[in-house]
Length: 95
Image 1 (cartoon, one colour):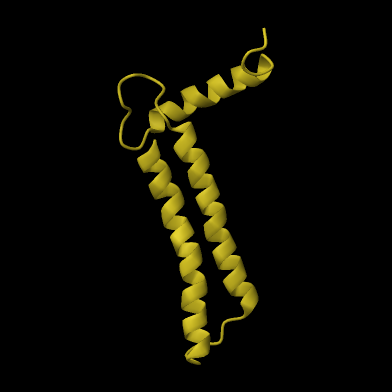
Image 2: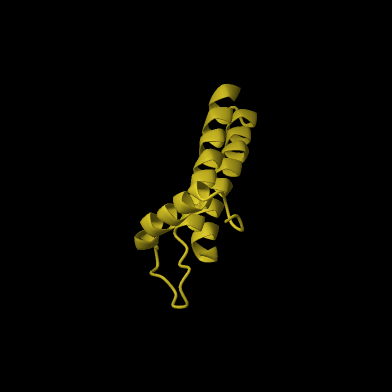
């Protein structure tokens, strides 16, 4: 799970920060004129993708003793159904 979260959240977050650096470099060297709204939109999109990656990493976790597969796709449906059942019952600890 930690590896999936690290990759699916870390890569988009680094790309989001890289957009600021690349934009600054291109504008300060007068190589390309990039409107600030484009820089903000691209970096915001990457950060949003990182948030989606965090959700994917958590929902693809294997709760069994044996480790799951590399991508953990088979666990997503099971974990979503467990989450829904927990929400319907009023959360953990409520009977």
